[in-house]
Image (tube, rainbow, N blue to C red; front, side, top):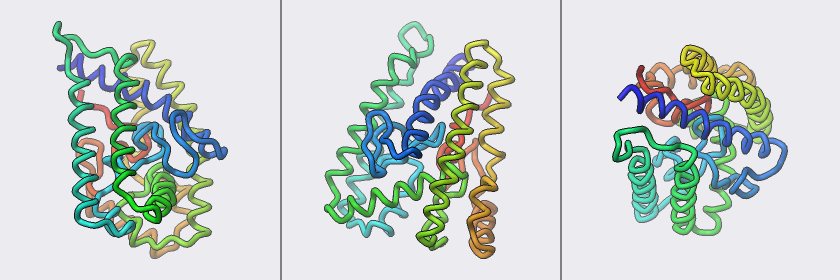
Length: 258
């Protein structure tokens, strides 16, 4: 079991390194690998490294999508089903091999991408044209919040202005660059087998579950109070905050208990 847990951390490092590159490219106005410009990048789930969120991202609460995109009951059901299938298929890939050894994450990473891309495509197909346009803008804003460790679940109540959204996107791009450098250190620690260093770096990237100061500086006093209350009311569980913080809050997937 310990071997599998260490393997999951290694997989997070490999996946995170790739996603971080995509996040930086988006900050420069370029689509991520395997994605497209405009907030619907198909690579990465906005978990490790702060990559672009998609509608298939478990980090995006379904109730938030229902509210912001005005989804019908049938659309909600279809999205939940697509997410569940992607989760089940991904978990199947992560199972130990016949010899009991951990899976080869370099080999299964492309398959994980295919699963996520298929789920995103299926979900995209359930939306009307106007909802697709709204979803692209929404995902861009949610990705910025997650990268800055501001709980996604606060999005609707924050009522961000256009200027705030622009500033949050810029701050998110700066954070992505810093995170990419940390991921390089994390990769080096993984290759060196330095588990203590890996844990230290990952903990630092998560920021103890608190929002990034760059993001908070853009919010009003009332908005900051709203975020503080949300965090208090939704304590982290195994490195995750229920209701929209997402895996690692965009700062790195939470490592399994050691």
